[in-house]
Image 1 (cartoon, rainbow, N blue to C red):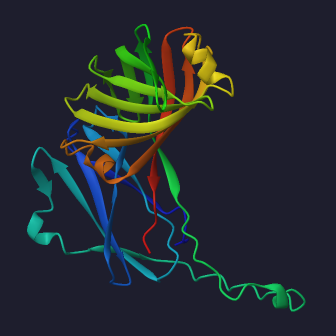
Image 2: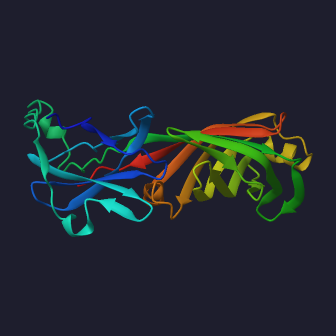
Image 3: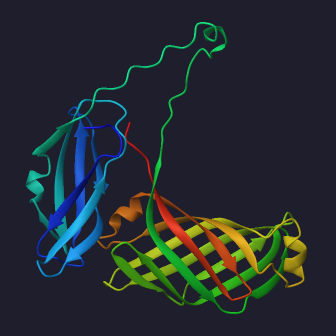
Length: 271
């Protein structure tokens, strides 16, 4: 088995929107790690639900043992007393030999090389929020304060869909360099009954003239936005989102009263 891009597809029956899959694994009998399953499709005729599981790259080791757990509303298969069993395994491909440095360049090589930990981004969903009229609070010692309140919004990902609830807000400070510092508190209500609490910082780049334009209540109609959402929930299907750092990238469309961005989970491979 290759060392990067290893994945599984796990089928669960009967299908249920509250189903969630978690795969626990260990390399060469070492520390146990876990990776969540992402729902990819449902065969309603056969009542089978399919989940994709993507393993992180394996830097070291030879044998990977793993077990899959299906959870639904407090029930799980296999039972908790079998959690330490790893009935399945696969063998990794041999590591490629390290290239020897060119002798002419070895003198200039650094004495030590720092370890590199490659992270992977996994798509979570797309968000579109419609705001009411911006509230220009006024100038503060740190910049121009502007508040945005969500009127409505939608969120859609692989296997789920929902709404951005009206209580969601964005309290922004536009600094003297034209950067808008975002402070978002949002609540997402999904169609399957899950409720996600979202807290995020981030930046909106209004350009070098952004501060002056904010003071004149004349922000640019379009601007790039970068976010760092922290998502928390007790819903079993989405609890994996409470254990990862997400990032979001998109654009504001203040001329039309909305903002849109895509959210990705940052997956860090085990050591």
